Amino acid sequence: MKANLETRKSVRLNWFKQKKVPFTLERTMEWSYYKSNVTLNELRPIAQKQYIFSELKNPIPSTNIIMFEGDLPQAYMDTTGSVGDKFSTDKIHDTSVTIIDRIVKADQGEEKVTKKPVPPHEAHMFKEIQIHERKDKITRKLTVKNESHRPVAILELTFIENNEIQFIKSNPAPKVTDAPEYKWEMEIPAESSIVIEILVENNIKNVYKIEKNDDEKIKQQHSRM
Image (cartoon, rainbow, N blue to C red; front, side, top):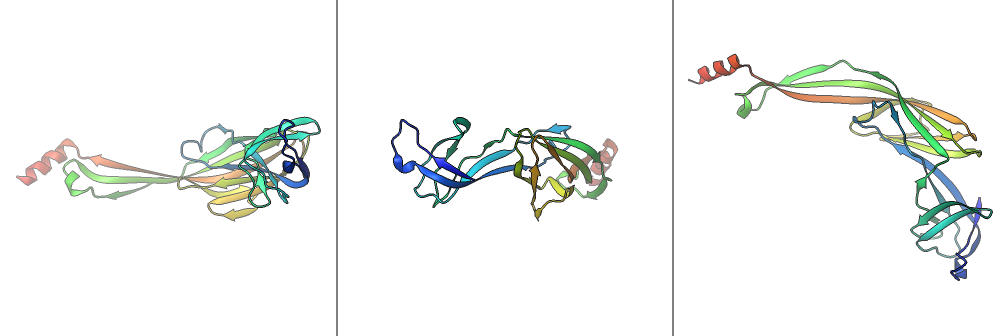
């Protein structure tokens, strides 16, 4: 694709004008899960878009940009300016793509309990420390819909795991696996949807200090006499 770069009619900077500049439209969506949201019924991630221009004959300064299709404005964006012979617009919300992320299933893992002694300075109050751990498996489904009457050529979706929620598998499988990032490149026909099911693991760890009962505290006090 190619575009013509024009100045505002009120600004006479002819050097800014450039014809048939190659550009690409990049659509992306990044998301992660956390303990606070991985089991919520519904999430609404947002897709973003930006334009990448290349082969510039003259540099482009930091400026506002209005994208036209014919004589009609289609998008209002900004750029921090060109670097070399390229520049890109800032990312904005891509309203032609809607994403609904719903929970499908949550399987609670078996809880394992380990014990360890309390520090000596707390031994008069607590008899032990208990560590409760389990690994829950959560399946979520992302439905990505192209709301426009034109196909979305490529939408790059990137799941980023963290120390709370880890990726297990998905359908379809990621095109690129480079932990902690997992990438899909999806084509979406006009007014159609695609679906990604993703299985993640929630590692849950809780630590408890178990208090001694009154009899144990009294017995300990007598043993010191």
